[in-house]
Image (cartoon, rainbow over all chains, first blue to last red; front, side):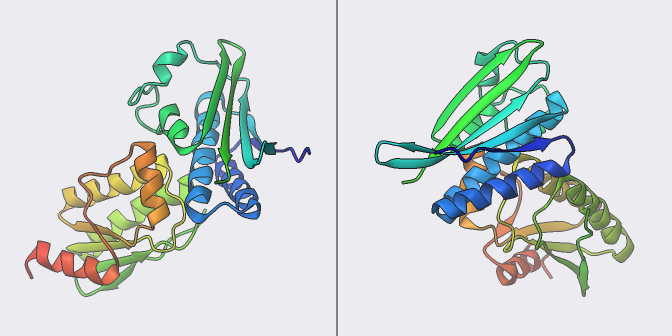
Length: 133
Length: 119
């Protein structure tokens, strides 16, 4: 099954557009209100990171199915500066923006699966999944 | 961008946020509220978040800042009606809003203000 769709992140308003779009997918999949808020908030943070650090990129949504489980997969892709030390950005409280975003550890706590690939000068790709309970 | 209405009631200002806040609207609201405090000489402010489904780190920062800014001007702010899902996601994000006064609903928020201002 492939339902992938992407929302471009170019302007500030796209952050709201992306989280509303993701929330609708989560709602239709049957996520409860707390998980809907978690998913929408994670999208908001991912989209803001793109806007702040890479200026533009996209957020892609997919429905994933595992053995006896179903979930929403969100991939945030940008061609920004990339992240030099991934272990550092995964520490709570680490910031380069002066505290504008909650950072990656917060996003990780909101979701079930978290994966990051980043290459300096090329860009960053963050994949998160929330499974239906 | 939208403008959030700010209502005056005696010495208080009441705000009910009923839209999905984008960054610009949040910043505009911050400015509007401070101006309104200045204009009216309000001593207390209640910002009701009953209808707000999502508070991300940026919106939380703007709300926390507006509480500190109002405090500098001499007005107390109470945030009311934070939804369970919003409380859960904020803590997941690592945002505790420790110095921000909160109450369950508008009514309790007004009682809290009255106590704090000892009227």
